[in-house]
Length: 288
Image (cartoon, rainbow, N blue to C red; front, side, top):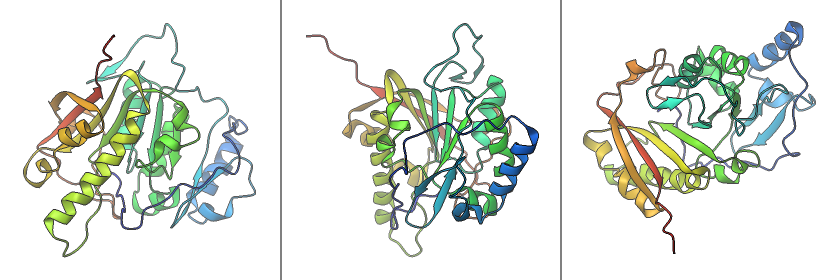
């Protein structure tokens, strides 16, 4: 949902071929068009290794391509003195990591509200080629995010992201995961399905806990009825040392342009009512 997670065939992030480095600036329209055309070709997932503008992560089933623009502002450094802009509980001065994005429409919604995305890192588990083939607006959304200064990464596994060479070094104010889901398996008993979903959430919490600032929050937007309530997010969070700070009703109309994608191919949206955003944080430090 938003991005399907295959636990049965878990994707592993490979080593960096070299440490994170900035790519040559793509300010000229000609260079920008050339790179965008390469990326719109799904074959570029595996054929672009000679271009110094790209970094690769090797996954079990796919090779993902990331672009980092030289003039993109580091999300760890917010602009001092810039006026804050809000959309619901999200603010332009917060360092944000969005994980599990589908067509990146939620990230684009925030970027438009802020007028910029230099404070944001938006990620997907799926490769750019997969997104191109399955979500008709994904490429347009990704292009807009990069234009607004967002760092967009693919192949980011939320169950081990704290070990990522770049992301693991940043302490975020907000980590956002909308509608996490471990996928569908036909004829799988309900209890087994629930355990898979809970494992995904637990490992996400373990990683996200290591990546937030002392006052940071981890936001999980999740359906709040029936089978989904049985996942018991609060208990999973408490098991890794996180506390539930607040839960608020989620209405997707508060986020113009956001589309809730199923995440397992196809471009359909799922019905997300009723849902809540659960806000988790660290327990307060007790002074001796």
